[in-house]
Image (cartoon, rainbow, N blue to C red; front, top):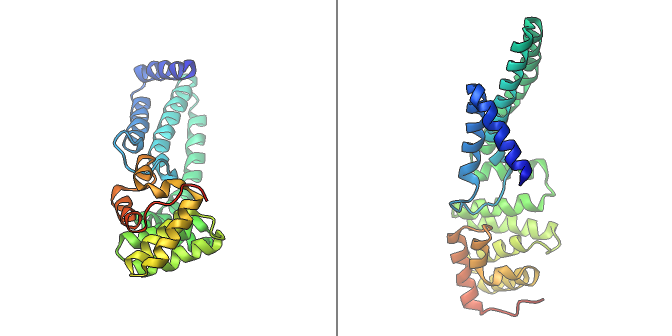
Length: 223
């Protein structure tokens, strides 16, 4: 707590003397607030949540460096730093532009993930959820089966997803069996509302799993 207070006081002191630093700090705060789950977004964390705050940190760093160079009045040093910065940022900007399409949607993201890593349990599992959200349950079932196979039936979220997909395509006995196996690994799947409370699932998804829970009856919460 003392460290946070120190950082806050230091930030206020710098902001007082630098508008550029203030803009960077605003980018950090404005980037973090919408994804802080003050209003639930049903995703506890993701690396992309840090992209805008990181841009803010870069602005803050630039503000501090610029003030340091200004005090020293070393124009050659400033020019050299600018050239080095451009040399570093230009290839990164090209890569970022190329990767932008991957972040266009959940489907594009997880398709790219399994293409790059065909042994990713999480990749296939999340691809299944992306397809299921687009009302493509048969394709979702295929990818969830891949995730279950790769995890040796040890990934509860993929088993629960497979239960949803099988239920949607009318294979209800198999769906209930998959749900039981998911519950044996993680008791929260016996009570879908707990998944919502833990920000793991969105309410609409939990409501669909609840239909399987009601049809099957809740089992014991231990394997």
